[in-house]
Image (cartoon, rainbow, N blue to C red; front, side, top):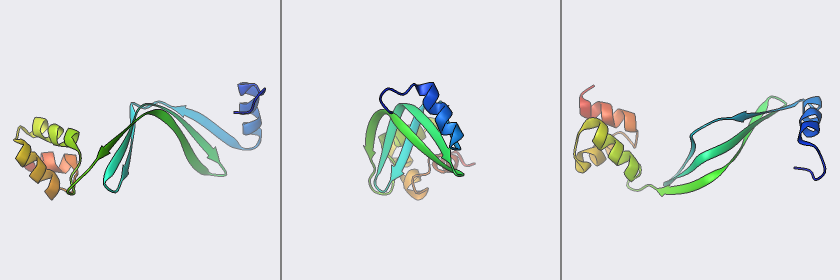
Length: 112
């Protein structure tokens, strides 16, 4: 972060200023935007809390999935197909009706 500053000293200085940080372990981070999802695989996440506000710093392998027609990407369609045991057309229709919500689409197809 700052050249010539020991990371432990930096952490101690931050604590003295009331800034707390912690590493968060996660498999992936998904950021949903209008029309696309940014998926970060194998993320390195640092949570920083300062004056009661939390912010997150995320790094990792980025992949972007385009979404179209109000439903989620191909992976979501495949998941619904596998979990509900239905065709691609049925999975897409269920996702459209559920506004892209995978769990609701699966439950609807299974009659739950």
